[in-house]
Length: 275
Ligand code: ARG
Image (tube, rainbow, N blue to C red; front, side, top):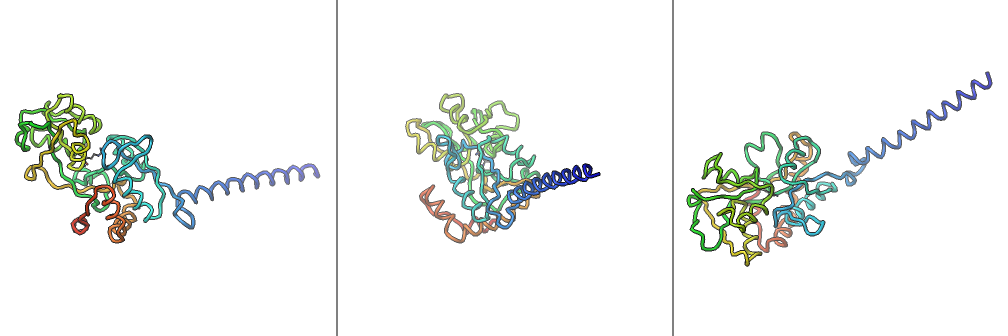
């Protein structure tokens, strides 16, 4: 009998030890997932395609660019830490859809089709597609692209714009995994033009004068687009990040980041008017 109760005490002690160990584990997990008292501790997985300078590109093993500065400022304002990971363009959509990532920042245009599958923040950047061609090219407008070979990044609004001109299944549209590869194809004369976001092609032409490329604008053919942060459908983060974006619009942080990256003033009023 004595021996039995000793055994029982021993068992009870070990059970309570195990339980308390579990308890500690649970508590620290909670702290991580909802921040416990302060949500500062929650780290969000943020995915991008870091081959789209000046918005996101690799500098050594660092991801740098306007989007990086922007998402850092907004996340901080919302009370989150972020872990920004370069996963590539097509994979980032899969990660958000599968809810493996909390949000994506990647110069992503808010459009009707994407809105069916994803949630977007309020707009944070105005963009339009433009045409990158070699100096001296006969291409002076979107209409001139007919009969030419266009290189685009697969799954972008640039691809959609090219399809609008050459037709959806045109074999004269060469699609690449990232926009740098599309530009390389142009330089290697495998394409006559690249269609991509104005800021990206303008920066490229400016920073690589040796490549002798120029940018063609065609306002009548290419619509105005707005970038947004992209979330899994129904994510609670959307509202928090919208609030934070409006705060950085109003407190001068957005203008500072914009100025640091582009050397000009943003039109915040126009961005806000789109909300
Ligand atoms: N704005 C365009 C789109 O949403 C192109 C974005 C490409 N972004 C990138 N990081 N590669 O389709």
